[in-house]
Amino acid sequence: AELERTFIAIKPDGVQRGLIAEIISRFERKGYKLVAIKLIVPSKEFAQTHYHDLKDRPFFNGLCDFLSSGPVLAMVWEGEGVIKYGRKLIGTTDPQKSEPGTIRGDLAVVVGRNIIHGSDGPETARNEIALWFEPSELVSYASNAEKWLYG
Ligand code: DAT
Ligand code: MG
View 1 (cartoon, helix red, strand yellow):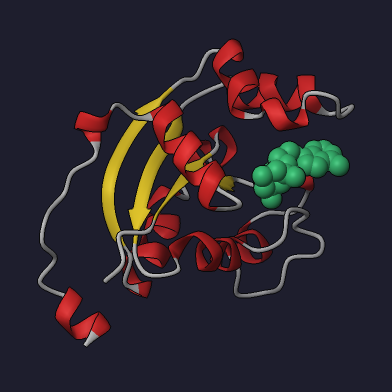
View 2 (cartoon, rainbow, N blue to C red; view 1 turned 60 degrees about the vertical axis):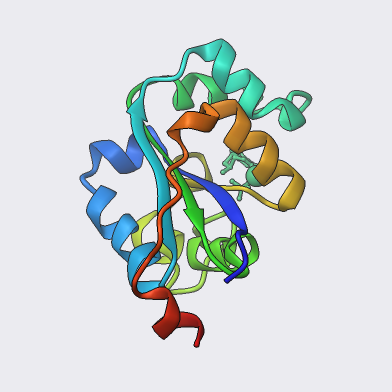
């Protein structure tokens, strides 16, 4: 199996609404491997760094206030195609447009409270993993399910 990794975070709304287990279970049951996880309250400055690509958007300040408003569950998930397919599991940015069956489609209502973040490509995945985690926090281990998942 490819060692493709993506950064996934449950935002403060998802944590406060008790959706951690529901969201983790969707990635876990799909067959992805959890390689890092921690609960942290990011500072506003950290949120600004995470969302730096959006710094010129009108919602940037509110978005960074929101991300730093409470605990965020930061994770790294590994598996073949996990970056792109993880985004499919999450659903489109605006929950009003997300398909039923996706995380945002099933569990969120408005774009400003869409409960989850996922890296949007290989380069962002690399950068976001490096921003949120020390290399030593990424746990490499053999998964016994792998031979059944990948053949
Ligand atoms: P995504 O989280 O799907 O990658 P994004 O990177 O374009 O979406 O934006 C990051 C977050 O910013 C998004 O999850 C919610 C917020 N956001 C995006 N567009 C918004 C808008 N038009 N109004 C309010 N918040 C918005
Ligand atoms: Mg994004």
